[in-house]
Length: 257
Image (cartoon, rainbow, N blue to C red; front, top):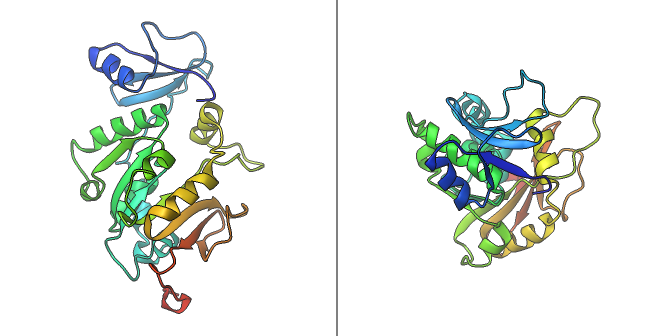
């Protein structure tokens, strides 16, 4: 982490979870900085320096956003980048789970998803969000059974080639210059975690393991990490596709138009 986060742990369960993730605990709310706190609505990232009315950041995978994003089905840019139009039920590893939206969306459009997250902070928020989702589970949750706290590059080095059809990567890059103020989640996470400066190394590791292709999510105007074989996107987001030689033969004419 680029900035320190502590866990205001009020229960034995909180202390045990914090200890597992090596997040320092405190017994009182800090006067300044970021901290985690278990609230009635779920585990929340709080900023003691924010306005008093600020409610913090909590992940909610059951707020309808996943279903909205999955509404495009196999015609969406994400589905086309994954290759679902030709091969339903792809085994996808989300190597940078982040806020969990993409993993959930991939599960909702028919992929079998495993996910990795190396940040202890994000993993704690994700684990809590999945725990709450499992109380009244949406149908897609069964297609995303695995979330692992691990550095993806090191984890992939222990995986046999072809274990996953697709390795999906959504690196955190430096925030592009924009007139509008960034969303709170992105602003806080950039301040806490910084950019993923090792994204190119992760792509190289993913290309060894992926059975058919690697997919990198980028800002629409960002430079690609490497020359891509295919790209799909919209005004704001682009998915760069790297096909694995002798494993995924693709013709643009096979894509949905």
